[in-house]
Length: 194
Image (cartoon, rainbow, N blue to C red; front, side, top):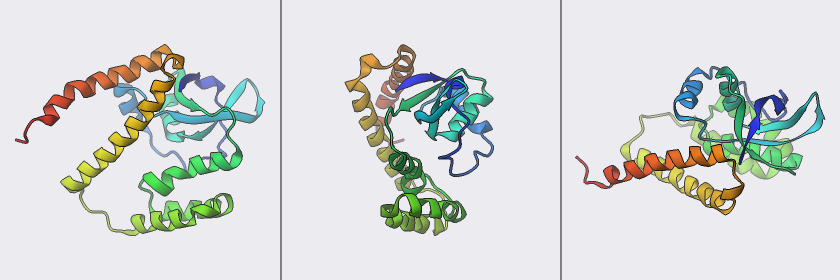
């Protein structure tokens, strides 16, 4: 991961699957907590006008950072990401993690079929999840979601550890700041419930 100047990122929307919409709440969260989730960038295929990078995922985060008038974006830079792999990465969110509506999934279905025919079962499963009526999250749902995100975070931290020295100093500082907060929170979570 590295910090990339925003003015080196092209306005290219090849991999944008839906309009960013209102990003004001996201901007407030980034303003208070910092950018916790990196965007994915790859070299711009037809670089020009001083732009070097193409956004693969993270269009809403990019808009929020621009709204905040930030100069840099925390990014996973993929130096040699093929078109097929970039599409797989771009479509992973709506297929596997993000809660998209049936209409949103229908809007990207043709792109999924043409770019990632192997992902058809994942598209069907995502449609099934989106079609279910949303109910208030139960405590069990919350606990499961937190456990899954903690597991994913552990994997990313293990990957970051391998190249910790290569990460930008500011990125290391932000990661450590968030981890210190978790360390302070852990003893409170470990106590018996009230």
